[in-house]
Length: 137
Image (tube, rainbow, N blue to C red; front, side, top):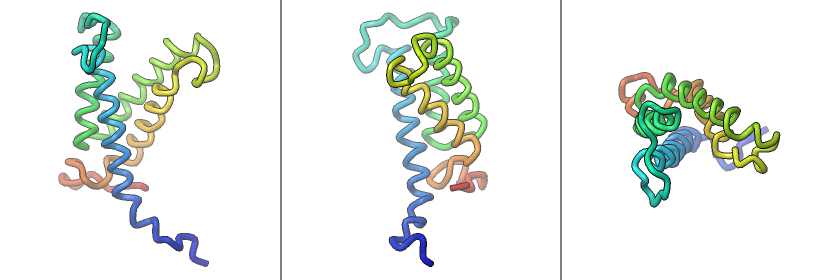
């Protein structure tokens, strides 16, 4: 019995890369908002030696590395940890439900990065060009 009549499996590699790229672009924007005030933040930039400063730096540098798919597994693992810490430190104390405690982004970033740390960068990545980007999709 054909369980994939539309042959959607052929899209798993490209969609793996699209998920990595779009997640990384969104993640970088969180860091640039914290550290650079872009796009349009009213908050002053935190000192780099502060928790928010380190988080913003991780989001920009780590996000750019994931974007191009370089060292994706270890970087994604670190970013998943950052997002888990952000969720438990900033959002979970406000209540148990991500939709109510404003933690949806941290929650989703954590699990997408955790998956990328296991699955790797997939195609369309520098890891794949280096021979390390085998997709586990």
